[in-house]
Image 1 (tube, rainbow, N blue to C red):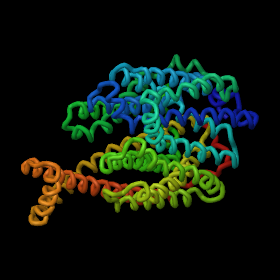
Image 2 (cartoon, rainbow, N blue to C red; image 1 turned 60 degrees about the vertical axis):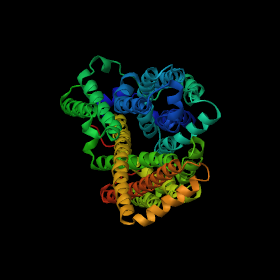
Image 3 (cartoon, rainbow, N blue to C red; image 1 turned 180 degrees about the vertical axis):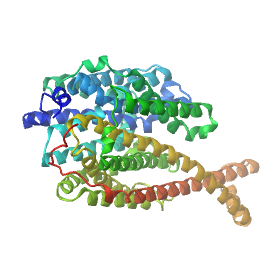
Image 4 (cartoon, rainbow, N blue to C red; image 1 turned 30 degrees about the vertical axis):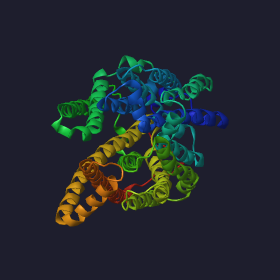
Length: 528
């Protein structure tokens, strides 16, 4: 083993007592759950936050965008920082600052302060996401290591799935500020208890003196600009908006500098060397697709229920909760299969079932509610753990200890990028398909004018029961007819979007046969 590795980890995390390892892992996994839950916890309550802060409709979107932009920058930086100040103190600082920023979000006095505090919350919380993956794989060996991707798989998928449900319930029974205040007690507990459990590695503070600040800055501009472009593009017709176009250009320039520094810097903040392993590279591509499906489907269902069915936050939460329940049921099955069956077979079944769940959504109608959505959501929830558990194993099993942190950061980054790309793409699809179907329905009404006129006449007659003004009754009937056409066009757009997502998952199956997983208890490769 090289000197670098010996200096980096004189403490052997695998040699710690089993009970202590479980306690450390549990605390870190719960911290990761908190950070990921807060991505979506505001999704169903943005209207309440907007009213509470007197914000405009364009401004309120930044409550979500600011968090995601900051988090996606921190995730790849966490590997460097955990080496420099140690995993224990990075995670402790992250949990402590996450708690403080949550308090500040709950006390925000206007939209600008909320955006600033949400950015801080996302940035400091992002360090908890990849750190627990790397620590779990470093501490456990053999069959117990197989439980790491299962546990972290369920926390990293269940948290964003439950976000709208939990957020809607809290807003309904308390106040939107409690979306953030609920982090205070668990965050404080993690901040106090984790340092007392002991260390899993040693700090290397000398790394901070040689940090490549240009690499840090280019990483922030590259990923932050990319996230902004993906978040805001669908709302502003992409490059027709100067802000989106500027973000895209800055992201491109930042990306060029970032990759140049990654290859030629003497102290890069993010090493791309894990991509030398073909299996890791393909696992990252699969994780990109998983992020695409997970975050997009989690986003689409509440949007459909709110936009088409007019459900409240609490009703939406009660409906999408099905996915979380089936995830919990699938976790032990996925963990057991990953130790006994080639991961390629498990992930093949997972991707196929996920595609089936999405395809079941493609027959959606404006009348769909809890029971109609039950089976598609159950299939999708069961499938996602069969996707992510073997993908984590493929990516991180057999990685050299010196590269484990960087591999974890890159792997988690790909899932978040997949989610950002997915939400941007499905929003664009919804807009384009919605316009196309609205035009098609309008054309069909023109071809069958008599039928359309008969419907309007019937609606007018119904409206005349409530108003003596014939002109007003006709206006009400025409407005109702427009709403019906719009609702049908929107529903057809959702069906088309789900169908295309299903095809994307089926296409990803072409990669699976080439992902040769490393044995779970294989020794890591020698370091060079």
